[in-house]
Image 1 (cartoon, helix red, strand yellow):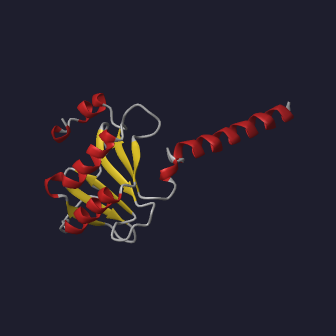
Image 2: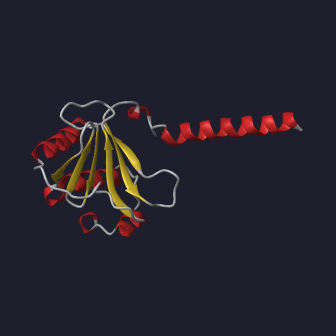
Image 3: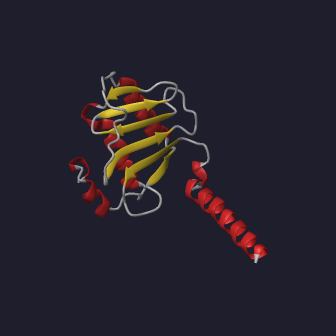
Length: 157
């Protein structure tokens, strides 16, 4: 009886570790530490949120340019990402260590939040950065039309 319990416990631990690895594993070979990993923060009923790897040098340069042009802004809350169901914004991870782009930044409704040693807030005028990342998500086919309609973002329609 004790041996059976140990075997079941071992199986549960192994299954948990394997599933954790599969959830955090990048979706393609290009995602292995290159470029920017873009995660669309939207409740979609799936275990992992839609994400893609941004490796195109021209698009990465556009992100860098928009980040460089973003003016500092005041923000009183703890984060620009709302605690709601549905579309909450975008999280970008600089897996490639690209100079001039923060290690982690969030984008939502005209605001950019950079994270690292310190948090800072910036304006995303005209939601240019957010729109660029969302349009690329559609091109990468990680956002289906039904999900885009649910997100209710006029700029993508």
